[in-house]
Length: 228
View (cartoon, rainbow, N blue to C red):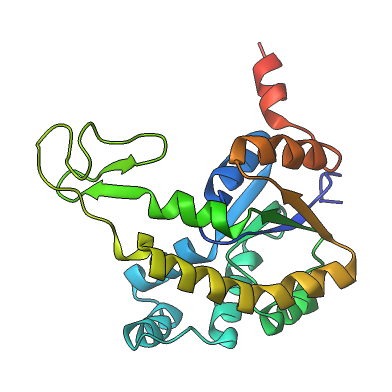
């Protein structure tokens, strides 16, 4: 219970790149009174501000290395100190079992939301993305194709595929996620806090996540809507 008698929820959201984690997280924040803490945003913020830990993290990124567990843990736990009186949703942390163990020493995790989207669907989704570099316009050959294949509708300039969206890169990213994250999911499964939501589309997964969270927290968007 929080200081005002509120129920505090400590949650983690997990899912491979392209699984709709960003969309689901933003919907959770809209409906439930949770602070969203994304490790990626936190890293960028610390690097931009040139904090001690941001500078340290940047040295690893610049060398193309993974940021060590202790650096990521220090970063996340430092930020969580400011959120003691809030419910929160962690996104992108913990990524490894040592990170999960370090988090456990300080905070009890109540629930881990795992978005289980088949890799083939993700691959299709990500590799279908094409971009017009100068405007940032995004096309998707599956559901938002350009009028002419490979050409921007407005300027007639060629579209490019981001390095991250190329099939071989996507496969590599998904394999890396699986290798790193499977043990973390197993860790939380053994603790009895893992909730897996499966589907091929975010709009089909979201109602399941919403129904589950409603059993834990009140929906603040309903309250706001009924306030005169």
